[in-house]
Length: 307
Image (tube, rainbow, N blue to C red; front, side, top):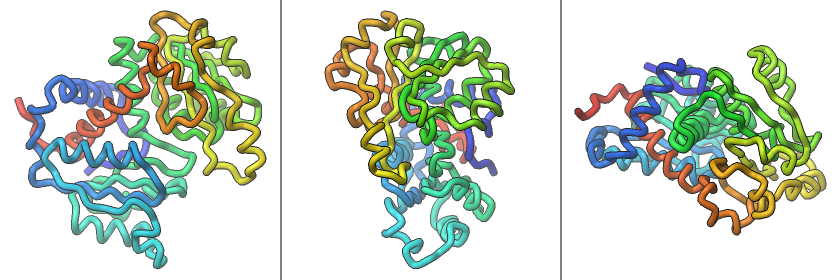
């Protein structure tokens, strides 16, 4: 039995196989419509989510399976003080696989140690968000035709942004990847990412503050929102939240084949006028998220695939 806590839980070869499966699902989803007819997914979400929770539910239902679970800690026995380990032991009696989101880093890992079913980390605090990373990798590969030899700009909240941390860790395994890290000084990437991931793997990167300076060099621009829920000080959040706004003027500086990604939800960091630009790929990215989660469910459940 396997769990998914980090994108690094899959080797590059396994990752490519998973993305190939997700691509095939996207081409012919009806072929996979009944492969999980007798399976149940539990969505244990201890903090709010729209895209991740609903895409997991859509993924399982698209495979013919059923879904049960809760959408906040207040609507679970966590409100009564039940531990994550006890919750997953009970959930294991009702479901075949579980997707868990939790505000505390490491909580899904604790759950996986007590679980008798596969557990998927659907986001744990500011730490990891592996299924978003799988979505990002599938999106980049589908749009650019490759995951190697690209220059990717990561813009916004690089300090607390778990999607950014996971994506960096996944992409450093591909040759010729270069990062431009765009953030104010207060929201730069944590030192462990800089030292233990980028420097240790000798991956080229530069840190800049102005988005305009980076735009002409990018193959992919990955925008993130400044997350109010990660700030302890409301004044700091207000000061940072509109630091970057991608608009038409900035898009004119970019390559014709550059694409804009965003894990969503968007607040103010991408102007709605950019939505009409063919290089705006963030809503397509959300669709790819369903396909990749379908592929992940099939892989972890070791379901026999249709011919």
